[in-house]
Image 1: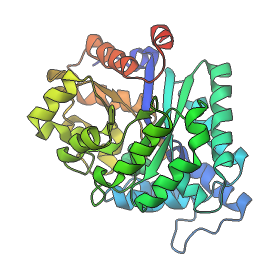
Image 2: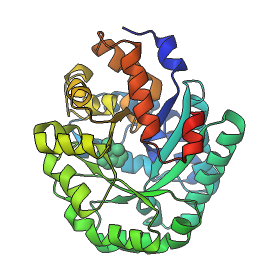
Image 3: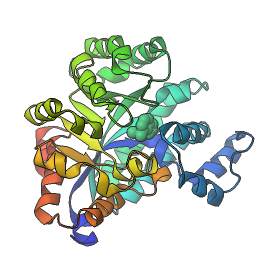
Image 4: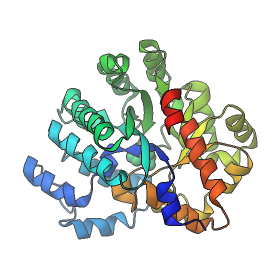
Length: 334
Ligand code: ADE
Ligand code: ZN
């Protein structure tokens, strides 16, 4: 297998990271105290106890139940800044050069936190990361698919200004996948395209849901990228299409293990994706919950695909650069 040092030096891009998913237990408890947020009855009382829960999620929903509690401790602009800054600080030591970052505005507006508070803190951290670490980044607004589509549509309207002034690069769709197919959000994506035709579009699909959700994301929502997408391998026609259209799948190895999508990273269909020439990137999803940041994801893949040499990882990193949403000038630098 390739060495950890090689993987650290490799210029890596992250396309699938939820900023709320970088909230470490060590920060969660102090923030809850600082903001006077009461944690629900039965919630773990210490970071150690919480880490033990995180090691044994039953599925996506079990994780989300903890994730949304964590989200509630974030309240001030400085909280959002501190959260994103802690992330940049960590990955600046892991060879990350470019990050496209999700956040879930509805988790905050539903508690009375203003979108300017959330977006302001995150955006300020992105600016500082560029200055201090040379890491470029973009922000992606994710719609919560367990919420009524009308709520999601309202979120798009509320973000109109940020969708056109360059603050937000794209729209995504996350949360509980299975009873909430892409078709429910056609109007939301259509409205986003109307507000800014250059907006980039992606959606979580094919994590717990079927390959059909991946096709539907492309056909109905007009996404040019798919988050997770690992269930695409069950549809040969779809695989050919992803390859032909150069649609990037943002795969999250450690997440897929922790959420029981696969038993081990080695079971992921990464070789099939390579063989089918389907571009994919490796990502951390919710690193504070799943036991690793970007480098740990690369390292685990290298361990479980020990026959992959430097050229394979160089190809993965190159596909990640090519599938990024930065401009061509930045791509050449990466
Ligand atoms: N929200 C945060 N992480 C997620 C994931 N892996 N799938 C769906 N929604 C999410
Ligand atoms: Zn995700």
